[in-house]
Image (cartoon, rainbow, N blue to C red; front, side, top):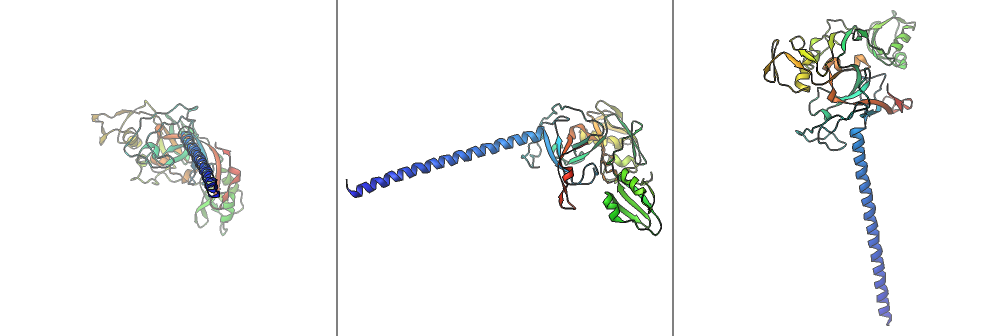
Length: 364
């Protein structure tokens, strides 16, 4: 065989070998890409299932739950505690995008516990518009259970005629009187963990816990420390915004009312319509016409109505810096998401650093 023919066949065999190697590498790359794609799909499916039925991750954006929960705390919320809801809408996973006009038949899978008084729980903000599951997430303390009688007198919450339990972390506003010609140091107050909200001459309004109030009262420059209570005639509610608050003057003094419960029969009147308007029209979707004390519900002239589900009364632990049930009313049971369980991370925005002492703290 000539030298030229030998070189030709050698080059041909080399080309075949190189081509086969290239195909094998391409096949291996496709197999690798397919495995990763399948792994990502399965990871997404598992994440969606966990997020829908087991746990949710939430961040505290406001100081309404201080000092129990701080702005910048990141929480794990157990949906299994009270029972997870099956999907209510068709949404794009991991986004707030949903298909408008489509509501799925849904139910609540039984949980391992019931909501207990004073639980810290997450729920959909009731008076938001849109489907329940896409409403804004709120977190508060469930201070009133279905059927409880509640009253607020001079800032003190009474549950069934008994003062509610006070927490070391509960914050509220105090009026602090300082001695004449003595200046109260803002940095000293801040180092204690309290905040000066207003100052006039020798009087300061300070937001703090009961323990902080006891500590400040021992300072030599302090004359007196007492809860800052709005007078009963003072109107602190935006009457045009919230239906519930129209029957009250302010959040420091609220006359007695009962938290609605499933099966409760109520007699509607002009005097109590502010308590039940959102329940009948917004949450239980009835058509209601009202003329004075006379009501027409779903075309029937009647003043009697049977409540269709349980409701809860929620308040923030920072009582004077929380827009809660005192303003917009009751939390329907179908709006409940889950129980706040664990702080898995905390970021201090003022100091621009993590709060390491709060990481992995259980929530009580």
